[in-house]
Image (cartoon, rainbow, N blue to C red):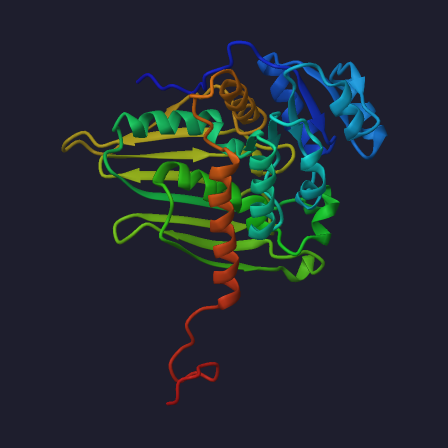
Length: 363
């Protein structure tokens, strides 16, 4: 079976200037751009030593002293890759040239109110802007989308994302200051991905909780369901505190339809940042024959290859305005609306048991 696992590339890649030199830039953005042959013209960070270190490691010709210098000295047709905490976006975003191409690291602000402000800035300054929801363009996701669009699974009925891992949150020290963590910075990827397959949900049910061993952190475990009516189930279950070894850790995305299923093991989340290998499995019903799963080799993973796709999509949009931009700020705003609904659902709590001490109903 032929499976497409590649996203279209730009005809003429543009130079990239990166704002931010954190772990995600070192581990994903820059390795992806090397693989793709994209040229990074310069980099800046409030911690100049970090920018200088990455410039040396990845042969980046310029380290800018500030965002203002990066904007002033950027080559013509530069794409600005903004990889900073969400809290910095409102102040930073207006500094770029009117009409610029901009890729914003997710999330799109710290909450829906900020997302609305950021969307307004992008519209007012006429940016061609996208949010880096790169999971959509991970090679195994491209492969799954190809099979689903070809009708191999029949009618899509079920999408399940399950994560049971031991995430080293200490690698990102800014999270300790965030009032929202798990859904906003992690499960947001899966919400956005499910939307890309099933469209916008009718509503969101969610509960996100903390962990007593990470008392300084906001919630780190979530159960979430997107409402697509009475026949389609879309669920996200994440536990980032499974400290009991690799044996029972899980990280998979599963699609089920009326005629087949796909299961994708995303190894990057397990034993992070070392990671384990991916696996792509397909089961297609063949009449009365017993169902069998087949494994297929996919060229690339979430980290770093997916980051090629998100940048490529933006460059292609800049080349041809009629081309799609799947993770445009307009689309990303809807994902942020789902995130906001999830937090509201979690804060609202479940329906109290009739007659229980917490119920308002009288016995």
